[in-house]
Structures are given as structure tokens and as C-alpha cells.
Amino acid sequence: MKDTDNQPQEKLWNSNYIKVWIANFMIFFSFMLLTPLLPLYLKDTFDANKQTIGLVLSGYTLMALLIRPFSGFFVDSFPRKKTLLLFYGLFCIFFGGYLMAGSLLLFAIVRTLHGAPFGASTVANSTVAIDVLHPSRRAEGIGYYGLSNNIASAIAPALAIYILQISNSYELLFWLALLTSGIGFAVNSTLHLNSRELIPDKPKISLDRFFLLKGWSEGLAMVCYAFSYGVLSTYVAIYGKEELGITGGTGVFFMLLSAGLILSRLIGSRSLREGKIVQNASAGVVVSLFGYLMFAALHNPIGYYGAALVIGLGNGHMWPAFQTMFINLAPHTQRGTANSSILICWDIGVGLGIMVGGIVSEHVGYHHAFWTSWGVNLAGVLFFYLYVRQSFLKNKLR
Image (cartoon, rainbow, N blue to C red; front, side, top):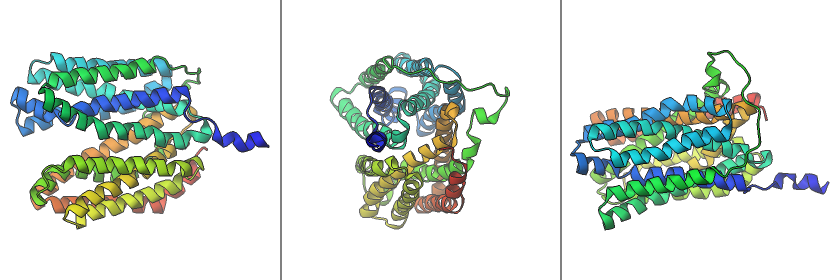
């Protein structure tokens, strides 16, 4: 009886889980070292204008989106560790390409191609993380795994800005990104994974091999939430400067957002461990909705900074719950596909938010753009409560 009672307390932080956690931290640390400063680099080095900068940098996101369905298929169809190391190794190598890119065209090519191993390695690494977790700690482990993204995204941009200020060298940042990603690759090379069942033979052309069709409703809701985040994260800096006179507050905004994400993941870990996945998702989407309402309605620093913390708290509850929902809808042979599916939906939503937010803000102003983001988020919340929750409980496999 005692053993049964202790079963839910299977070890969470096993050696393989720690390794993929560190490796994921290194992916996002190296990624976020460069991302905030690349517009400055393109302007200072190649004298690129705003339109050109946007075009060059958007290729990365587009390529990551295009590769995700195929990366899920490869992760499910071939040995997990070899696939992970291949994608992760390519992700590292492309940082060296930035050092060798001597023209704007060559840099654009390297940056665009780099999106492919980034999209693939994030899918492969998160899938391995799920593999090495005990089933009783899986939902909780997914939540803690996301902390590696949040912590890296919180400290890397600030560190990059500091290094650039004291060294005035973009090249040093490229080398540092190459080094940190290389450390992640070295850590992953020491993984000890058990052999597993590969995806069974299916028709050569099958959409379900590239997207988890059973998760379509969860995915549609996620597109709505990502849409709101795409609008906010893209236009928050220029809105703060032009409308509120906040010139140096963007870093604080994203630090508060990260703090909310980290805090909510820590708070929500217990309920995830207890299997309260739908409850966590339900709370998260409502809290996030309130945060977007604050940002749209309160045109002052309280609304600006307060919304960041509230949205972080909501998304920190929502994301691991939704990822667990996707995993629980898929058979073990489709974990990679389940992981890539939720990331595809997030990428689509963010991309639509950036595009629509730009159009709305250009014609009728930023306030209307943020009200639009709240309206789309509200639609996602209503859809979740009216359909998604019941659909998940009906179709989940475990």
C-alpha cells in the first residue's frame, strides 16, 4: 500500500530531464542573445532601413513555422536522440554563419535558413523531455520545462545589451551564442534514452503524420491566444514611447511578463501534478484575458506594467496545460507530432497578430489594435469554455 501511495512522487528531476532542461535553456539563451539586437546590427553594419530589417528577420519565423510539421514527423519516425542531435547541431552551426556573412544578402540567407533547425530542435528537445518524465509527473514536468524558456528569455537580452555597451562588438555576441548553443549540444550528447516504438506504417500521404487532427479545437483556441500575444509583444515598445512617453520601459515590461510566467508555473505545478489540467487551462485563459483588457483599457503606466505581470501569470498557467492536453490526445507514437502541432498553432497566431495589428494600428491607431487583440482573445476563451473543454475530456487517451 505504501508503494502505491508513493507512486505519484516518482522522481521529477532525473538526470535525462535535467540535461534536456539545460539544453533547452541554451537554445533560448543563445537565440535571445541576438534577437533583440539584430535590428541594430543590420542598421549599423549594412545600413538597412526598417522595411528591409523586417523582411530579413521575418524569414526566420517563417522557416521555423514551415519546418515544424516535418520535424514532428521526423522525431516520431526515427531514433529520437540521433534526430535531436542532428537538429541541435545544425542550430549551433548556423551561428557561425553570422560571423561569415559579409553582405546583407548573405546574412538574410543565413538568418532565414537558421529558422529551420531552431523550429526542429525545439520540437525534438521538448519531445525528449516528455519521454524521460514519469507519466505521473509529466504535466508538472512540462510546466517546469517551460521555465527554461522563460528564464533564458528574461536574462539573455539584458546580458546582450550590457555586453554590447562595454565591448561595442556584435561579433562577440555571435561567438557567445555559438558557445552557449554548443554547450547545449554537448549536454544532449550525454543523454541515455531507452529504445522506443517508432511510428507504424501509414499511408504515404497522411495529414495526421504532420498535424494532430484530434487537437484541432485546442489548436484553434491557441491561435486566438497567440494572436493577442503577437499584437502586444510587437507593438508594445513603440506604443509605450509614442502614446505614454515610456522610453526605457520595454525591458521592464518583458521582465514583469517573465516574472509572471515563472511564478505561475511554480504555483501551478502542484495542480498539474494532481491532474488538474483542464482547471489550469481554464484559469490561465481567463487571467490572460483580464491582462489584455487591462492593457487595452488603461492607458497609463499601471495598465502598461500591470498587464505584463497579469498576462504572464495567465500564460504560465495556460501553456503547460494546453501542451499536456495535446500530449494526452496523441498516442505515444505521435508525441513529436503533438508537440509540433501546438507550436504550429502558436506561430500562426503570432504571425497573424503581427500582420493584423500592423494594419489596424496604421489605419486607426494602437488603441484599436489592442482592443482587437482582446476581442480575438475573448473569442478564444468563449470557444474554449463552450467546446474545447468538453471535446478534450471526450477524446483524451489518458
